[in-house]
Length: 274
Ligand SMILES: C[S@@+](CC[C@H](N)C(=O)[O-])C[C@H]1O[C@@H](n2cnc3c(N)ncnc32)[C@H](O)[C@@H]1O
Image 1 (cartoon, rainbow, N blue to C red):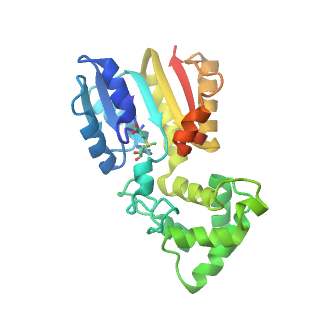
Image 2 (spheres, rainbow, N blue to C red):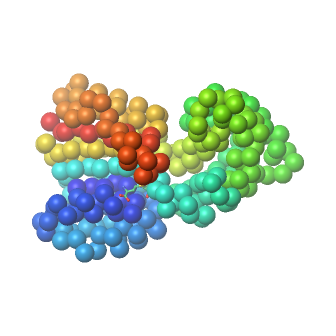
């Protein structure tokens, strides 16, 4: 099986226990620290495990290089882990003030700070609207542009404060409990890491890589990703390439959300190669 977002290795660990000594897990991650953590977690499994520290958009190329033509399972758990969110070096979170970076793959050149400080106001508003689906995008971009005229925005805390000033408290204005900066941060993370294009490439690469009756399972965390997965599975089902296993996505129970609030927006979709 291929775990294209191996993270801390928790999902792969469960797969590994089922696979036994004849099994093979290939784990990808763009974050080298995640690969190291997964390595520790999986080192005692009976099955073989090897790691590829790269983007899942190049999955086919990497598997072919290893002499693997087809696999029985492709698993993706998109986005970032809680460990990465808490990592000051990643600069992903406004829960704590950190340098505004957001590159999961440190080989990338453009940081979130580059985008907020260098993109013209209209393009910034378009980006926040397109990738954050935030209807207040124009106002947020205006406040960002005003602020950076006096000094650049360099930290997550600064940016969150600017967005809060632009749109006010969530309870008063937006009838939602999410933090006002959540959508802007989502938009920037998607842009910095090219997340939607990477997902599209993964979806295109999957059918030729799956054995007959092999599975693809994808956990997404926001509607832009989920829509891509849903439409891709539907199109492949129409072509007769997939059978959709989850007519509706599998979502976490209230109990799971109570234990892990970040799971609240997770959606799992599964399809089987025909
Ligand atoms: C939600 S975590 C996965 C957690 C994992 N399922 C586990 O059991 O620990 C997502 C992981 O995917 C990685 N990632 C995100 N986009 C990626 C991409 N395009 N290619 C490879 N890895 C990616 C992140 O670095 C992160 O470690």
